[in-house]
Image 1 (cartoon, rainbow, N blue to C red):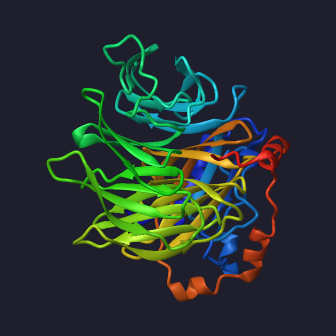
Image 2: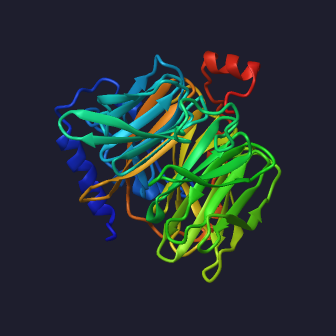
Length: 443
């Protein structure tokens, strides 16, 4: 990416202001916020160079102005659900799919979030969905997986292709089906090169399905507690699982067989792990895991092996980290504290900085999904978040070119800024607080 100077950024702000003079002024300052990189400290001699925010522009400045801003974000859509909490979000072919407590999996158009259609199953409470190409996988309350085909022509059309485990030659399933999960399916991952679907469940097992013939080719007990997330490295086929038992495990498929073997266990703390994300740039691979203690651990892959070494923690969330999403060098984390944090990894190192805190939900952020947005000036992203306050939001994010920063400078981060950020109590919706008192809503 080309590096842009201060003049280019000022012209970019001016261009954005002129392009949006005809937009409505109402709710502009609430929908949009401007966030600097957290390790940065303002240079008072340069504050006068920043133009004042325009009330007509949807891209406005926050009270924390710095001469070297890193990220702009804007909430472009916010929808309230009447069908219960959204448990899963997936993106494919310009559509965003949401799975909730209802029997309908809804499809929304990217950016403006207008509804395109829905897929309806015989049972609801969709805990996990996964999209790849024109295929959609969904896990339901009956502990089964549905496979759908859809198209994105003028009208949205979908068709259920198969159900896993597939129906046998008998009229009904046998009373005890060893191929079926015995509890909620909490997560799924798809290995594209071989058409293999992995499913993790609250029954502590991982099952491996061959999509071409809908067969379960392997099943193994992965953890001592609920399997909360599962990932597959598309480059080498390694499978990552994490659990409420506080561990992350790496599995390798045995050559020319369908069985899997454990090659490494990562356990740096005892706190339950709720989510994972895999990030890569050039020859670097990083694994991130979000814990119930509010921290995000990250591991870096050794170049000539399948081993990962612990690199440190990303700290900032007040409560449990429930979901993670990674794209390029950016990592998005959603938390029980109702916020979404945007982190950026410095190229060629393990140093991370928090670029922004997206604050718009009134309940725990349960799931995240992100994709690139083409932009000629700066890198753009679309982020979709769903919360236990029954809202679904779409965020538009622009990241300015990375600026090198020495670690000594970041160590001198203003303690007053840190206190101002962490002393703010999150605003929780009363409906979620009631559910929290009755029991954990995350399982």
